[in-house]
Length: 342
Image (cartoon, rainbow, N blue to C red; front, side, top):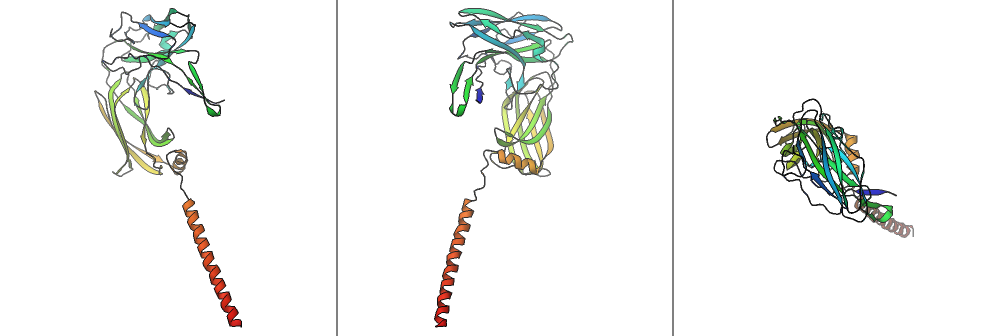
């Protein structure tokens, strides 16, 4: 049986970590509740996620109170993840299908240890404890991530046709930021790769941007244009505002072709990007191979396959008409020959 798992995360505290933005969100469809116990070294006491001022080598225990108001015990699986950035320019604090960026010096999973599972008895509350150990070496910047709290048992399961079932899973995600100083980090941005590809079975030009610095790129926006190499005419373009890039992370942004087939050749990406503090410009050449374009075009669900039925019908019609004309010409000639023979 195939399973399509729809991860419907009740992302509590998963809003972006821009200054002054609350990370509180209303949770639903949960059999338990989670509440952070804010420690004295919280930078902003108004925030309900962990926003902590730490010291090199410091060890600290964080507490999240789990409450179960149901009549059955609930098993919760805690997981720690470093913050990443998705293709829409949104910071993810939970599990994400993204490789760790090479510039990230420490994974939050290595700095925060937590039980693999915890049982919350019916009508009871328990404290989930997280052991934080900061690196011995002084660190300038922000280490960001989140604590995912997911029920072990599937919340709902809906049977679908053709043997496919959809499982809905719900989880809390509690943000965590750790920093040792208020020293401002100079922002930077790198353009790593440009290539033809697809997103959601649709052709696109994909380029990868990297934030190699231990700080957020807030109010991030970009404007991308694709031209033929050496030409100025814009073939494809895309722009987006109000994005955010996590510290030491990368993401791949798509310039969609909107149903147009990829064509082989040499191209250039012209990119402008800026955050609340810095701005950047990039120009990068790339190539689309003929076999690559053909392969991707066949997989694009928005490209209609050529309809040759009209041509077949036209040819068939012409053949029939010509056939009738030849037949009548042959009959006419035959009758004429018979009269001549008499």
